[in-house]
Length: 265
Image (cartoon, rainbow, N blue to C red; front, side):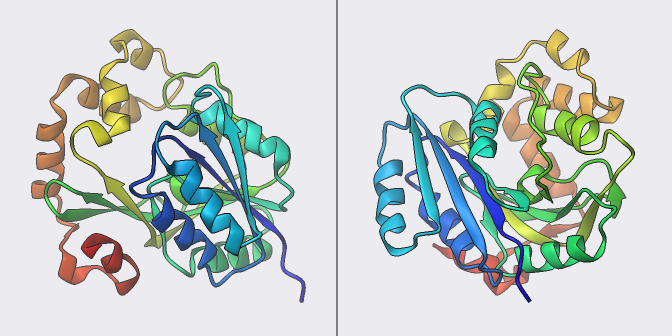
């Protein structure tokens, strides 16, 4: 039986330390009918050089480079214009996929046509503490963890006027606009690396936001409160609290082999 093509989208920026392991986790999927579209947002390091080397050995990789940084969501919209897949799958430039991720998600979506997308639980691995926290979403929901998301390619685009919570807005108000839902697997199929210091781009970006920008977001109150905490409280305090108070905290010993190799490397 012919399997549908999946377009995997990644936007990169100065990712030379981790882009190879991220890309290899995509190319190593048990579900092989995919194209990997990577947009480099004007990196100043060896990111593109690494990608071009990988591309030589796998023609499923397609690289696009920008002379200026478009940002993540404008970049994803550019890639969506080039995507040929029946399904779209999102990954961040430093996250790792379990090898059966796409196989499980595409199988589910092919057999559950009313759902617009599929996500999964993720493991947030905190580099500074060498511990992970299991993060889940309700099975039937209007959101998923963005880096775990696979959805039907029906012409959806990100609203780049939403400068905060763009991914949540996209899922809640674009993908699920007509009452459709996203199914989330309870098992972790994504390993998210939370870097410390200057490598933690999302935390650095959050600190530059204005409180009024967060308050005016069109997202649920609980999500606003979470963002406000990240804005107001020191990043190290938030991460320490999450890692040391969460009953789902994981150590190296409890990680699956799929993810343990990336911690040890």
